Length: 140
Image (cartoon, rainbow, N blue to C red; front, side):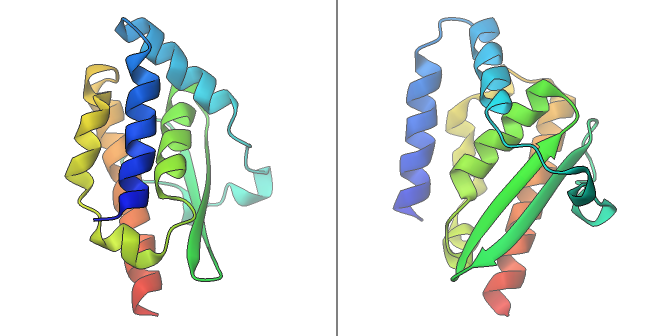
């Protein structure tokens, strides 16, 4: 298990703990998404589109000096916030760190209390894509 990933998750849990109710946490996600740099229209290609999301989500992975850098975007503000959180957790790590990480640990974020089951499925698809990117990079 990566301590860097755990640290990042703990930071997000702490940030979410400042909010008393689900609406405030929801607004936190929206604000987090607004801070995400959007992809250009040229980057929003079919190959980067995540299947299983109700909204459109693109996730690009670049391997830079042995670390995976993720960039992403969505056509909805709340999902864009989820993309931003996932990128914050997984970007700039080695493929091995991501492959070895037990994604069940993300449950501590409590996102299932904030987002709908459809968005939970989309989030799961995003995480699976990140794991796939990492597994491909790990075996190259």
